[in-house]
Image (cartoon, rainbow, N blue to C red; front, side, top):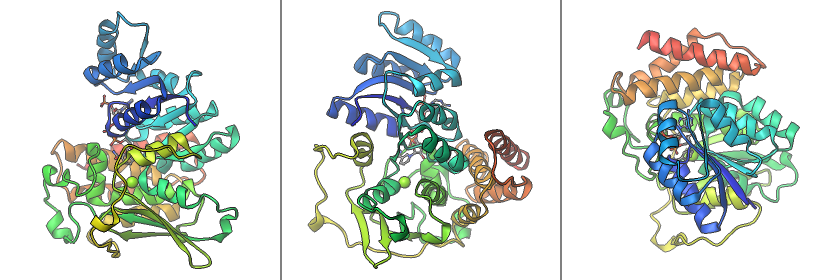
Length: 381
Ligand code: NDP
Ligand code: MG
């Protein structure tokens, strides 16, 4: 079980919930990092007393240094600062809860120190899953998923001694706020509508990804990498209630599901205590109060992002990095209200056409594909 932790992205939705779980479990907090939220990071440092606090942006980091001058805490900034937090000798577990590809290099730094990585930052596995999983093997670092679907699968795989017994991994998907709508109806959806997720409260980027179903596409690639399965062994099923978090179908026909109320503190807690389970103060799932559980196929016509991601999973190489970077750029523009909702899949598709695929990429190839994909989106937006 985790004794001391570094949290990358402590001011975000996953980061804040991780701190709640740390407080419940008495886990020591060694390092906290954020992008630029000085006020919240200062409060977190005062409460949890880490030895290192990092802001990615320099000006806010200088401001934090001034504000924390009464405490014995080191303040750092920039990517080197985030990497220092990830590799800090004082922590045995690193929670990667930054959003986007920015999490890749710090994740690799934690792996190289052989730490447990409680991985929320799915974009990292999407861009560079091959490299990340290979270095985890090389350095003996455990990667324990925090994403609820992958945590569910990870839990349903406990006790599976022979991976050839797995027939399928079944990812459940809430369908997001625009479930049942046509591509035409979706084209001009507003930011405020897209930010209204039916079952989960999360950061803005992932909430938009849930509305386009790109989130499920990224999770499809994440599952392929994390559990070393072929795309043919992955299914996505719409399950509006978000009670079953995902399933594993074994070759004898048994289907194991992990269920629970939609609350990210459960997968966070499990990633920190695995292989043990600790008592939770949250109320358990009340089966008698549950709505009927329903299952439907996804509509990849209306939600082409899911189909594009599934295709990239088959293509492999840098195509997944291009998909991810183009999506990050397009979602960023949508959040600034510079493009329409319907342009998100269009811009991703155009980037996939524009940037050539490199198979078996090195880290530099992935970073370059990421740069070209973002440029392709900004050129066409
Ligand atoms: P948020 O947007 O709520 O939080 C992002 C965090 O990362 C903030 O602390 C932010 O700091 C920080 N950050 C952003 N960029 C950088 C950077 N360059 N360097 C250091 N810190 C940075 O995101 P979420 O918590 O929702 O999501 C985090 C990750 O977890 C994503 O990859 C998401 O897909 C995944 N995830 C999230 C779930 C959820 O329920 N929220 C569920 C499953 C997966 P600041 O506050 O200063 O901007
Ligand atoms: Mg998820």
